[in-house]
Length: 276
Image 1 (tube, one colour):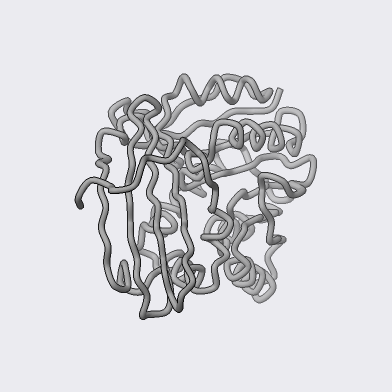
Image 2: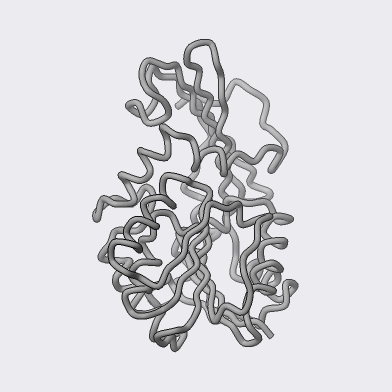
């Protein structure tokens, strides 16, 4: 990819995550990836999720009847597994297609899980949850202000002492990113729209912030749309400060959401904290 020809946008100057996840064409591609047990582009591989759920239940001491909030639940990859252990789950996601799938599975299997189409930055998160989970590094797709607001809202949605678990894109990941630009007919093999369409993918890096922007511009039938995907690569200290400012205790740090040991050179880490 060559260097981007456009000027580098201001950090966090657009936010299109809900539009990305709820786009009719894109959401179909993402649902298929979620349900592919070996794919990593939408969820972790399902074998990883199995280990992750087993660890979460043990680490958080979850018991049948406990209530868990699953932020960005997708089609229920985590929620259904937790519900099969008797945990009552409220799953929220911006994708109507994914929520429809999650609901259908829960009804068919008689699972204690509810699902809602929601923007977790502004919509109701419920109250008195025993725990909340936020997985697949979605925390790092938001601005600091958005992260702070979500943490405060999650804090208020938990019972006193309730647990919060999330994984985070770590600072070492930034070293792998490079600016560039590419233009392709039917960019990414028809992922972004029903072919034919024209697509461009521009990547900018912000070394002073350890921030990356991937902007996709899709033109079809005279209509142009853009999807801005931010990736903020954070340190443990930065995440700890944001959690504490929102009313959580200093977190325990792990390598991922299976409870692996923390590796300071890894591109990801996970935290477990609790509401005061």
